[in-house]
Amino acid sequence: MRHSFLLVSLVSLPLAAQSHVIPHALTNAPGSSSTNFPLGNSTPGRVQYIYDNHEVGLTVPVTLRSLEIRALFSASNVAKSNIDLEISLGATPTPAAAATTSFANNRGPNHAVVYARRLTNLPPTTPSFPGQYSGPLPFDAPVLYAPTGNALLVEYDVASQPSGTWPMDTPFTGAGPHTSIGSGCGGLTASSTGGLIGNTLTFSLTGGIVGNPAVMLLGDLELPAPLPLPTPGCLLYQNALVTLSTSIASPTSVVIPLPNVRPLRGFVAYGQFGSIDAGMNLIASNSRRVVIAGLYDVARVYNNSSNTSPTGTVQQNVGIVTRFGL
Image 1 (cartoon, one colour):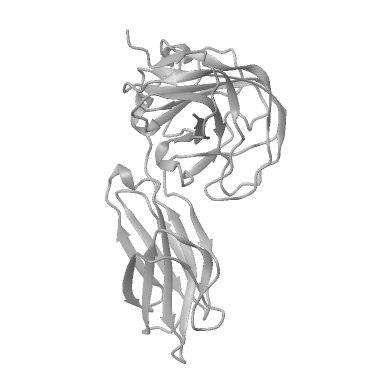
Image 2: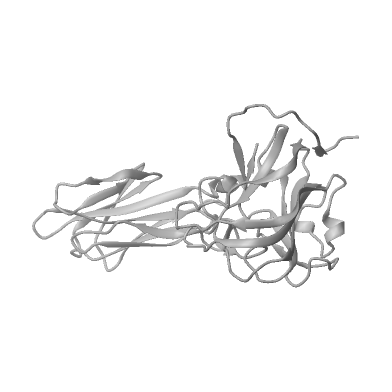
């Protein structure tokens, strides 16, 4: 018989710290939404998160030793204490799309408690990209995970918790996060919309002299420190993989088609405009950071009023970003 999960007792050996993030496409980028299920509520509850195998992104056996949950990247979460928490997990033959309202029916044969019930504390977090983690919740015994094509189910059983939200990072539907980096000079301001695979990503510019030439720099990296441009007060905030020529309009828009391909999800794109003012001085906008979004094959089953009820509500495409210690 093949087992996807085995609870094993291992002799602890010194190992370099390693980790693995799921959904794996969001290792270095935030998801498109946030949730308070299960640790940011004020009630008991049970939440199962199911991640299809290709979203887990593991192809060889690994030993899981802990997990931690990523906070919403833009949130200033307040510390939360005394959450009465138990965590179990296991492989399941039930894919996210087939999740049922029955908690028991979603579990696989190797489902087991890995974090015995105890009072658990969450730290405060501050805004950061892609988001800060809760700190490791160590498993009572290591779990050997051998991917076989099954989904991964992680279950949180909260017997009680104090009031207080703690928004956690998750993919959902719609466009990914759009944020500004720095500020423009010469009256130029960049904005952005869209970013869902199979649709378009639009970078827009306001300000400047209509008809003057302009360029948009499309990159994939924020510079460690802004680079001064020849015009005082003007800065370059990103690299440039591609330079797209345009001219100042009212407003100026550059539309980029996005193919409907899964590997684009989680890609971080940067866009910054440059132009010249009436004195032929180089001027620049702020940069815009956009996370390319798409639907993820993840789901949750939740009950936010009871941790003993056998059933919950199913919601597709939601799965909190979780980092496992290996």
